[in-house]
Amino acid sequence: MRAKSELCSFGLGVLLLGAGGACSSSGAGGGPAASTAGVAGISGGGASGTAATAGTNSGGTSANSGTNSGGTSAGAGTNSAGAGGTSRAGAASGGAAGSEADAYDAAVLADHPVAFWAMNQSPASEPDLTGNGHNGSYLGRPTPVAHLPNGDLVVVFDGAQQYLTVASSAAFSIPTTGNLVWEAWLRPDVLQFPHDDGTSGYVDWLGKCENYSPTCEWEARLYDLNTKETPNRPNRLSAYVFNPSAGLGSAADWQPSAGLIAAGSWYHVVGQYTTLTQPADCVNTAAAPGSIDIWVNGVKWNHASHGQTGCMSQYNVVPKANGSALDIGTMSKESFFLGAIGKVAIYDHLLSQVQIANHYGTMTGKAPSGSCADTCSF
Image (cartoon, rainbow, N blue to C red; front, side, top):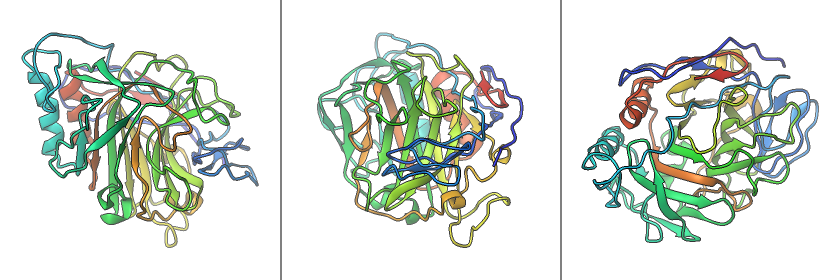
């Protein structure tokens, strides 16, 4: 199926709050956790890299409808360092007396996440700032040396073996309430990852699918600049969801225009899943209800331009709560993210466009703005 697309470009505004334009990617996406080559432009990702048939990608990336959908997130700017201040988690942070860092944490906590990690306590245990007790443990001792746009310190992962792991909880599973949202600030330090999946060309930088079958649930993915997929999916950001057996997954894809994603820049990425509602054009929803959405820097992708991409039913995914750990910096310890990750939050309810824009604006002092077609521009 060939998806339609609309022209898109966007820049950074100056208001604190603002609804971002809908960013569309020109492809149908479904990606596996262990991918294989895609065909005919419709992606299906599989956590176990099943073979693609009838023009469906079985690799772990979402496919375009014949063209790459551009759409990368706009950087919130380069790293900003500063002296003074402490973050809510107690690590030194830049900014004026820590007020900006405190404001961001307060904005997130006001929206009632079930877990929230500042990502600045390595090598010690990373505390869950919600008080719900979902503390994480670091593997490989990453160092908190990167400054978020508000000056707060966060860890930098080496892209080879370092990650944070959090014990499984029903609070991290979609079926518990029918809704799940993950949110994070991401700074890739390279655009071609040295320890990618080895098949399609991506890293899983967050997920709950550590051992694939039979406990796979969901993941966040960032593609290399030059992937092994045809057509290429340069630095695409995706939110995937899987059946417990892994295999092909349904996804929402945020595809950047050429050169939009920059190494060393910060991106605010939000992935959202629900089994309670779906767009009217989703098919077979009686068997596999629900949908997936993704935002980058407050700009939402545009499902309407991409057929069945974004529908749980695209690959008949019915999420189940299982016992996989939640990992940050990797998902299955097969690919590893090289760069900084900070302020990771999990919600058991949906966030509104206003809430997402508020988080982005509180961190950067800017409002999301822009538009998309086959590719997106800030």
